[in-house]
View 1 (tube, rainbow, N blue to C red):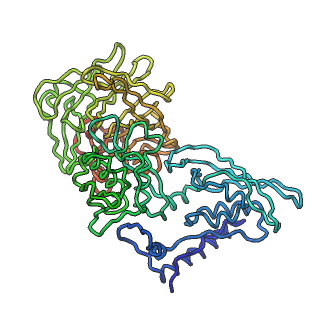
View 2 (view 1 turned 90 degrees about the horizontal axis):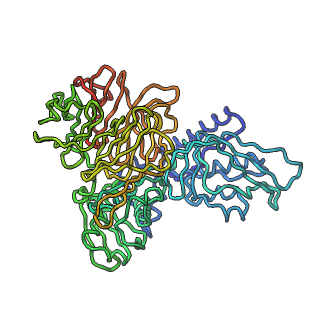
View 3 (view 1 turned 180 degrees about the vertical axis):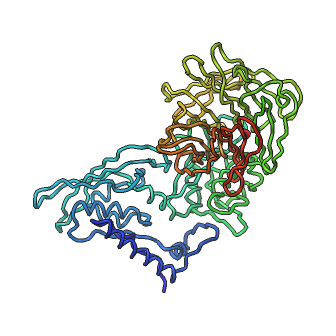
Length: 600
């Protein structure tokens, strides 16, 4: 016996008991199918090229929708349509059967997605006169997020209200004649149908190429390698595009929609002739974009780029591509904290901290907050009056530089380094509480323009490893991510203006937030409280699409994360101790101290 197709779970009925019974029957069907159908649980992801499409059909069980039944009521018809769009059909063939021919031709399911908490919240059907030829059905629910046509996710709490217009066809059956473009999905269905992946670009404007992730969502049933390469050739999402660039020449396309991956992880791609325009160094950047993008869905050890019937353009290894990764985790990450005004380092596999050499480690500066550079072995510190920002070297006893002095009646907080060696801090007016962000360059301090932030006060700041995005805490409550746009003086070739704009709230449910830290290039760790909850650290994707709670040490007041996703977090508690998250999700007290941090 073999089977590769089962109907979508039975449609929502009139009673919860009926739905539960029918769901149980569907689950039993899947168990039976699992006993007689081959369902691979591991193995690398490979695309099916032309001529081998049947391979994809013989893989895991596919779920299909239920077509409309005869004499469906308007309300049940809309309910059935909303259920049918959650199937695995690539062109929504069954869902289109609920539509009139005209509506089926007009409807664009790929224009975006509205994600609701549970769906449908309410499907209401105003009473229509007996024998009416047209009617409307209203659908409401609590929207939690939206996904645009580029498949970029954004939390967007709102009350959903959509209207479906129906009319009878020549057979006297109701069909949907007008409906909103895109899809309406529950949070659970969205998680089941779509998966998060990132496209990779380079930070701009900057001479040194630094890779930047651009998260999007793909349907789980698509062939991922081909789809990702095609999206990579189209360019970045609108939100990120002002601060990144692609190394692929304009109009470069994929030949024959073929991405070949062999058992050793060697990827071979044929590109159109536009790719020949790229010199050798640029070609290696192109291959690195492919390597990092495809490495999320299959094993990739190297990427070779060619043109159709042409010679090899270039080949890039996994190790070679790492030169462009500003968030490459250290084998043994080193954290830092302040104890009695002095800075101590703490390796992840050690319980014995070591004081830094020179003024930063001997206590002569008496620091309150610190930031360690991702590159260049530099450290910055704010003195205990919070009015002076110092910069020095991590491993040197040489004197320190006074980089900046706060204005009269103002104090510094939340210093942070980006992956380009740029130092940032927040300046706060001690009387009014108003804040401004400063970019503290060697040649002078540049006030950062915040666009779209209103009168919010910045209470925490961390810049991404690639320098293109800023994570901000606003009013000790909101976690926001914004784009970092740098204006470059065309004559002096130095940064002359800095703007953070297009802010997006990542966790709308937060009611308080104490600290935030980058955990690599596409994830944050935030310490905050959600509605009716306690203070807890959480992993948060940079688009807000996924959050995972972390165990909290009693009295936790600050959190710090390294670049490696599987490397230990540091925390400070109200007992004035520094804690480290050990294997098994347990916190271990290390030493008395303040302000734990990792480079960044």
